[in-house]
Each structure stands twice: as structure tokens, then as C-alpha cells.
Length: 240
Length: 233
Image (tube, rainbow over the protein chains, first blue to last red):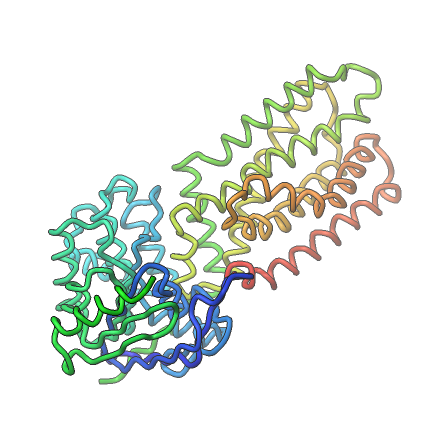
């Protein structure tokens, strides 16, 4: 697999009459790059990810994945099929079984060999024993693992994580971190999290988003975990 | 290494609609949230009408179409609101939109799910009208007016339910916004049902039937084309 690139130019988003959540944001993510986006609540992290995945349309500016806007009709649909999104919301139907949820997702992505791919995805997250159980009967951690399996079922080249560790216990968080580090090689990955330790462990470029703008952007090779943590705390403490 | 050809075998609009419609039916069958609620509301409202009005008069046909459609509209609103509220609570609609799904397929599946559930409701309502009020609804033009009314309700109700799903007062907002737009439909469908019950000729009822067809086509087209804007906002 060869990761995908993402380019945002002068990106801005506001909701109805409210002020801009993001403004004048420029970002280029190279193929196979792993980007961690950090920042306080309300910094615009989730909005940025939802713009990347086509869930929100930008108010101003453009966003392109491999040079194609996710909103451009059939081409946009094609490019959206190369994306995976894992959020703290699982987007799963509680009334449907794990298998039914994944099968629907596979069919909507036009996956032919669905059964094999579903089993492989569930094996990756250690959930094959639960495939015939309704999602509503599973614990929060298990549901999150199913969401992870669903988001990787179509083997996306760009995978986006929005605070995927929310509500997970230490064991589940460790499994998630392991999967991100080893199970998602040769893919472009973007993650937002409040967990600095997890974010730094699985990414190689670190961005701090503050009030809808990029306040800091550095490659991991150019700094150390301690220095970045210090900078992060300094920036966070300078905000009201 | 070469990049994979993404989106090569994506399902078309009809296939997407069918998949989403099946999903809605499965969720409803297992959760039993909308249709039983609509049926109970419908029975309760008819019982109230039965006790409130003295309908055992020779002019029962004057009141029956109004009772039929008022019960139908209010029961239908319950189901319509619920179909989107369910999606909002766990953001499952966002999950569908993350797949390369045409927003028009989301509209068509939701509209058809609404149409089928209100059709079930309407069959029950027609039966109950006969039981409670002893009216004869087995007329050919009634069989034309009822599905046209249901289709119009589903066609315009679906985008309004989608528009209000992310608002705080959605349960109150949906009827407040939708009922004024439904007014022409209600007028046409009540008039055509009343005329059909009177066994009138085609030329007397045709104006209303044509109006209903026009209303349905207009709102189906507008909603189909404009649903993308609604789901993105």
C-alpha cells in the first residue's frame, strides 16, 4: 500500500452565525506521514478531522486528498472510499450484530471478498468471538475495537483518529496503541488526542492547534518528547 | 508500490438505497421504536375522537376524512421524528456518510422507510375507522388518494426531519415547521377522500388527484436534489 497525501489551503469553518472554529489553516500531510494533533477542548481538532473526512464542508478554503476534493461528486466518493475514520463515537448500530454492521460497511464500500476481510479485521482487534453479538450488548472498549475494525475493513490509505482512546481502560488503550504502531504500516495517519503520551508514541509529526489555528508544528526527529511536552504545557498555560 | 484503485466497485444509487432501506427495516424490527409507537398513538387518538364527537350521524362522511388524516399526520410525525433522532443519538448517520454514499440514497431510503411505515399505519387506521365509525372506505378513489397522501407526507417530511435532527427542540420544531408546508397536501387529500367516499365521478375528483400527484413530484424532486445540503449542514 502507498499512503495518501492531504492538503488544506486557507481552510476555515464556521457554524451558522457563530464565529469561526477554524480559520486560515494551511496543512500538508505527506504520504505515509503520521501526524498527531494536540490542543485543548474547543481548539478545532474534531472540526478539522470532520473537514478532512468530508463530514463537514469548509466555509472557506479547500481541502484535497491526493489532489481531489472529497466533495467533488463521483471523484469525491472514490476518494472518500480511501479514508477511514475512528472517533470517540463508534458510529455503530446497537441493534445490529457486529457482523451485520461490518457487512453493511463492506457492501457500501463495494468490497467483494467481505467475509474474509471482516474476519481479518476482527482478528486484528481480537474480536472474532463476538461477531454474532449485537453491538449494544458489548462494552464501550469492545465497541471501540469494532469501530476500529470497521474503519480499516476497506483498507484505507488515510486513517484518521479522533480521540480514539476516550473511555478506554489501560488494557484497551495498550491494545489500541499496539495496533496503531504495527497494524497500520504504510498508511497516512492523523490522530487527535488529549493523551500526549499515546499521541507522541504513534506519530512522527506533532501539531498544536489553538483557537482554530496551528500554533506549533514540528517533526518528532527535530525535538524530544520532553521538549514537546514542555512546549505543549507552556502553550496550554498561556491560554485563558 | 502502486496505489490501490479505490472506489472501483462502489454500489450505485439504487443498490445503496436498498442497503440502507434494509438496514432501517432491520433496526426498526429489532428496536420496535417507531411503528408500535405510531400505532398506539393512532388508536388512542381515534378512541378520543370517538368519545369526543358524536359521530353516529347521517353526516359521518363529513367528519371521517378529517379524523382519518389528522390521526394519520400526528401519528406519522412521531415515527418520522424518531427515525432521525435514533441516528442522531449515536451519530450513526455520520457513519453512513463516511462511506462513499450518495446523499440522495440516504434521502430515498429514509423516505421509503417512512412511506412503508405510514402505509402500515394507514391500513390499520382505515380498518379502525370502519370499526369505530362504521364508514365505508372501500372505494377505488380512496385507494388512490391514500397512497398519494402518504407519499407526499414522506417526501416532504423526510428532509424536514433531517433538518431538525440536530436542533435542541427537535420534537417540537418538526411539527411547527412541517405542518404549514403540509397544509396544501392535507387540504387536497381530505377533499379527495371525502369526494371518493361520496362515490363521485372522476371529473369531480380529478383536480385534487392531479394536485396530489403534482405536490408529490415537486417535493420528491426538490428533496432528492437538495438533501446533500441538508445532511452537510
